[in-house]
Amino acid sequence: MMPDATNYPRVIDGALRVTDESGKILSTFVGHDLPAWRRFQLDAIKNFNVVVTDSSMPAEISRTIRGPDKRNDKFVASG
Image (cartoon, rainbow, N blue to C red; front, side):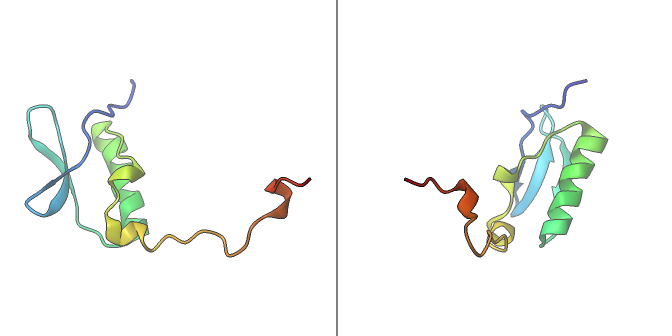
C-alpha cells in the first residue's frame, strides 16, 4: 500500500494536526523538539499510512537544526 501524501498537516486551533479527507483529526503534534517531531512522523505513517514531510515542521524546531561548521573541500570545485 502506498502512503498517502495528500493528508498534509494543517494548523487548526493553534496546533499542528493531520486530518483525513472528511476533516476528521487523525493525529496532533504537541512536541517542541526534533525527537518528538520524528516520533510524530513515524506514528503518522505507522498508524494512519500518512506521510508527514519536514516541510510541515514547526519553525521553532527547524530553527534548532544546524548545518556543519565547515565545508568539505572534496565537494568544492577547483580550477
